[in-house]
Length: 223
Ligand SMILES: N[C@@H](CCC(=O)N[C@@H](CS)C(=O)NCC(=O)O)C(=O)O
Image (cartoon, rainbow, N blue to C red; front, side, top):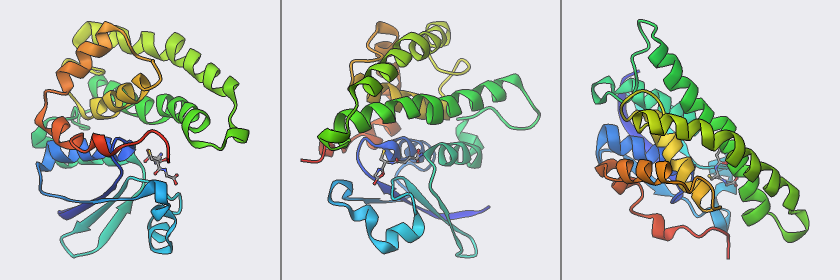
């Protein structure tokens, strides 16, 4: 795939911010962003649903050399692809030859984008997004406990060992995991020093600062 142009559909601080972060890492400012009015329901417009029937951000539109456009709708896959598409940025261990560093990196990227993300999403739905009658406090309690008792110790051990979630340097897996840590902190989770040091470290990156420059436009709930 030869990438000619990239467009990201985005909402501040949401899962698209992970993708915006890696886009700044690999392309600096050389990509297009359209910010969606999610709280006003713009994602349900037919033209948007045709691109993403799951009505969410991010969408990544990749225009190739022949002007065909490939559309992606999963943030973890986008981040994995972008890290591999720009190997000179050294955001992922190479896929060939096989290494355990690559296996561990993929495992942490997907752990962040699926397992940990799923718990954060359940908390967000029941705490911030569902109508009052649909909210279930037990779901919030259950997933907060799972994060505290199961996820945090695993991440903390990794951060204590190397400062990053996989291997001894910053990788694309950190774009997912640090975004999750920022998200978790909205709920009082991942509050300890190793997580503070981690966020201090990654937030010094210019690409992080560019990606989260619009975070003041995020509101935790629709008003
Ligand atoms: N698994 C998807 C989830 C995308 C997702 O749920 N995005 C949320 C924002 S973080 C969204 O756009 N929600 C609006 C809606 O569902 O209508 C991914 O990681 O890309």
